[in-house]
Each structure stands twice: as C-alpha cells, then as structure tokens.
Image (tube, rainbow, N blue to C red):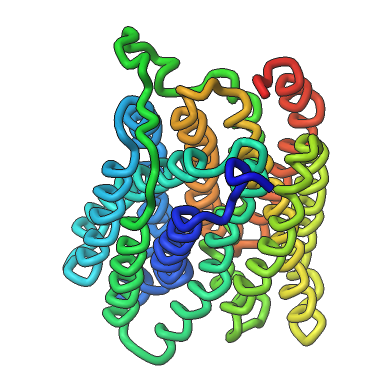
Length: 399
C-alpha cells in the first residue's frame, strides 16, 4: 500500500483519540441530565425534554454557518478554538443556580458542540485518503462509539457514588485531555479558493442532500428518545439498575458493525448498507416499545440488553454510510457544507425526539407510546430512502 493510501497516520490517530475524549465528556452527561434536572429543579419530563433539546437546537442552528466558515478558512485553528470553548462551557452547569441559567449554559454548549463536531468531521476527511474514506469514517466513528460504551455507564456510576459536581469536573478533564490530542493534528490548509463567490444560501446547505437528510432526520427521532430517556424507561419496565450496560452493549454493536460497514461502502455497497441498517434498527425499536407488554422479570432484562446491541448494529451500519453519501454528493470545496448538512439533519431528528419523547410520556402515561411513535418514524425513513433518497443519490453522486 502506498503512503498516499495510508490511513493510520499520527494525525488520524490523534484526531480519533481527541474525538473519543470529546464524546466521552458528552456521553458522560447524557443519561445524567434528566436525573439532574428532576433531582435539583423537580421539573416535568416535558420541560426536561424542551431544556435538553435546546442544546440540539443550538447545534443545528450553528452548523450551516460552521460549514460555510470551514469551507472558507484553515480548519484546524477553528476546530481547536471550538473544542476549547466546548470544554470550558461545562463549568457553567454546576454554577447555575436557576433553571433559566442552566438553560443559558445548555444553549451556549450546543453552539460550541455544533461547531466543534462539524469542524472535526470536516478535518478528518482532509487527512484521510479518498480511496479509504468510508473505512476511515467508520473507524473515526468508532471513537464516538467507544465513548458511548463507557461514558453513560461511567456517568451513572458517578451519579450513584458521588455528587453531580464530580461528574461535571470529570467531563472537563476528559475534554481538556482531548484538546491536547486534537492540537497534535497536522493538516493542510484546504480553504475554499472560490471564497470570493457571492454569498448564497446554497453555501450553507447542500441541497442535493435534502432527501437523504430527511431520512436521517427520521432516524434521529427514535434515537434521541432512546439515549435521553432509556434510564427512565428502564424504571418503567422494572429495570432499576444496570441501565448503563444498555449503552455499553449498544456501543459494542456500533463498533462491530462500523468496522464492516465502512469497507462495504468503499466497495460500492453504500445504499445496501443503509437499507439493511435501517431495517435492523426498525426491528429493534419495535421490540423496545413492546417490552412493557411482557411485564417485569428476567426475560425483559435479557430482551432489553439484546435490543441495545441490535440498535448498535443498525446505527453502526448507517452512520458511516450516510456520512460518505453526503460527502460524495458535494464537490471538494463544499466538504464542510456537506458535513454540516449531514449533522444538521441528525440534530433536528434528535431534537424532535427529545421534545416529542417527553411530551408523549407525560400525556400518555409513560415512554412506551413515545417509542411506538419513534418506531413509526424509522419505518417511514426506510420506505422514503428506498423509493426516493436512494435513487436520487445514484443520479446525482459525484464520486
């Protein structure tokens, strides 16, 4: 293999480790925040969903602007600035003495998260060979999944054993260490030489990615419900402890399937990978929503953890495939815009899932109905992809 096709460079390894530590800080708090808001502020699930979704809303609002900026300037300095600001914002949570101040820090954190993840996703494409893009994005995503494997479980362990402040400071420490690894990345200045083009809306959003973005949005709805409310749903079906294992097993499935899906994408199986991964996820969501019919007991626990692995496999297949799909619809000088559109679509779905999950849980006596609604969204996503988004990609792809 020539040096030109070498994937595992020092920069790629540093970027992956930095990405792991950033997402570890993120996932550390995902299952803890609903518990934190209930215990400290005694808020309803509906308000909790709205407050937590403000993070996602802020991230999706900033992503189009981030993609535009990153296509215009040297990406690494912007990435490092956004990374540092993301880490520092963690300090605000333990300092917030009111729900309004907490909401302020949540929105600010969402802005920084949207910028740093868009920048990281664009920068990693710059430092990997084009011939191994699907594989590289798959491995890079494994860092996220490893963080998902240990982050939520660690967060819930710290919640049971220590104070919330310890959790926040652990997140800060992880983020600062990740920043050091991110600083070691070496990349070329890929700024758009056409930055003198007139400002237009299509510089902020990849219109060719609309159909695929809608499919990804629909898949984000049930995902947002699960990662946010699974600890509360566990209590509803009699699983009072060990919910952190759900995230670990989900991450195992994500990692295992990512290692396969990236290579399949590079072999031209992109559309098949997305279709199969979506079907797998649909089946898992339907099973998860059905658990309450079974009652409580060992069978529910076994199925609960089995479903988490199924979800991991399904999403591990579609993540690198969708990422590559968006990049392959865009010219080289619009890579950051493509990444922004990909991540914005996902963020919107997550945000809808956060709010809808809380509202449906409050109005229908629990989270089961919310998961049924999420299952329906994933079914719609599958049929829309097979009938519309997939054929559209075949017709408009650039590579």
